[in-house]
Image 1 (cartoon, rainbow, N blue to C red):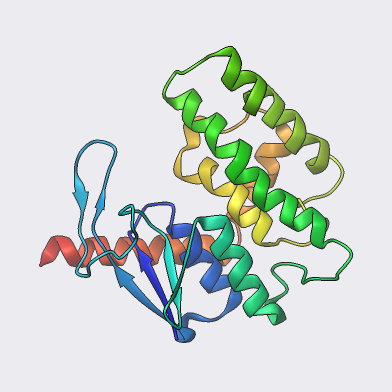
Image 2 (image 1 turned 90 degrees about the horizontal axis):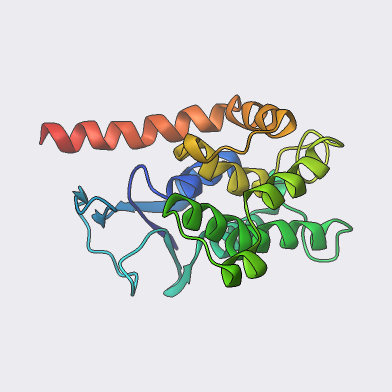
Length: 207
């Protein structure tokens, strides 16, 4: 049994989108939990959040907890390989796929968060680099292929495009990157993810 703990309009929304891309909505029990927002408000939710830090997403499979978006994405794409959202172990592009997933958590999100918080320090710059380096790394790939793994949209694109869709101010100003964002967001899963979250928020507001 798979259970996802989710808060609408949060980092866990990309897992809702992945579930849609994998076609496994009927396989997962999605539970909406309250989440403390950056502005101090708390989003609505009917279930208790078992995440030890009170965050989302959290996936539970047969009693085992999986946390962090990139870990959950890897877990689900391995568990449901037929959708082709990520290469499996032993496939030629597996290493590239793992690298993009890890790069998101280890570099992309720290750089974007530090930038939003207007934090700057030589230690941070040397460790994580900055927005210019992010743009150069993404553009170097996206000038060659339409998606990060090549010709097809994968969960690597789904993860790495996510901050630029829920935080447009962070979008890196490069034509290849903007075109990639547009390609990712024209997929039906983007609209269905937004509709899923909006429906719950509307329902909670009417309650």
